[in-house]
Length: 114
Image 1 (cartoon, helix red, strand yellow):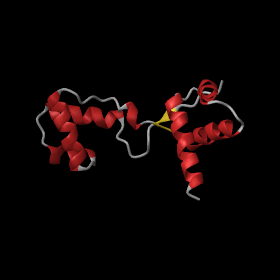
Image 2: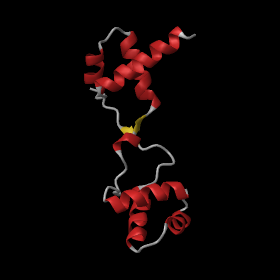
Image 3: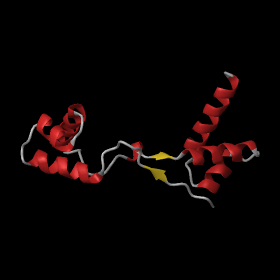
């Protein structure tokens, strides 16, 4: 079984940066000050600050932001072209069926538009 891991996309704030933001929010600093201190967009920090006040901001990066690398998508498409079912592909790669199906459907749609 080939298991593909998801990677955090470039430009996504690190756990350490998020920890620093939490510490600064706890000290009462405003969005602009926190943004300047961390080198982030004031809009990002504003959103984090709102979530912090609601109690929903954590140092963990949302799983939604993690992505598979391109070679994983290419491998899924190769297996599909070999005649494997979505279920078989998912089991062989460790990638959820819905993700495999989405990549396959997107590839099919791109072929019809060529």
